[in-house]
Amino acid sequence: MAIVSAIIASWVGRIGLLLILAGGGLFAYGKASELPARSALQTVEGTVTEAKQITRTSRRRGQSASVTGVDFQFTVTPAGGAPPITLTMPSDEISRDQVVSIINRPVKAEFDGDRDVYALASGGRVLVAYDTAVRKRAGALAQWAERGTIACGLGLPLLLLGWPLGARKLRKQAAAAQAMAAPAA
Image (tube, rainbow, N blue to C red):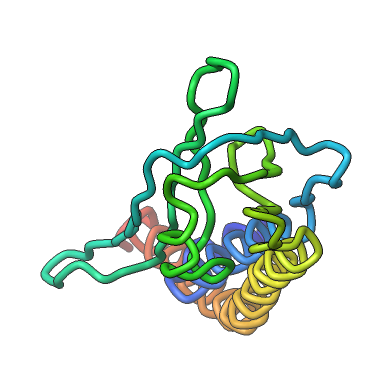
């Protein structure tokens, strides 16, 4: 417990501890996230009635918004009067021209429970293959795990530096408290 108290007593140690915790979370997300097997995907066949580009942005204090990602969202109306389904695809898997080319055309899409498309075909052409989508998304998850490893790697030296600094700070505080408590002789 003395080690933890010493680490927490130092700002450097706190930063290192936070980096290690955040890095561990990123690493776990990247390694534990599983992509669905093709047999677990749902399939819809119908006509694309609407398509739009969704731009995700982030805004930091005092700075303008920056783009963090672009997705395409399209609505497929199945034949037979079933309700329309809105599906999403990242822009790194399908181009804007491909999305425009499927509007008002029949498609077959394979998607997961979050309505993320993993395979898309239209008019006998495969626009997005399942294997390609899974490979790209697995690469993205691997990047999260790598970022977690880097954060842990940066946090460990800070944690190890914060330990003696915090211990020194706690010793000084204890000595000052002891000096205040000692009766004046």
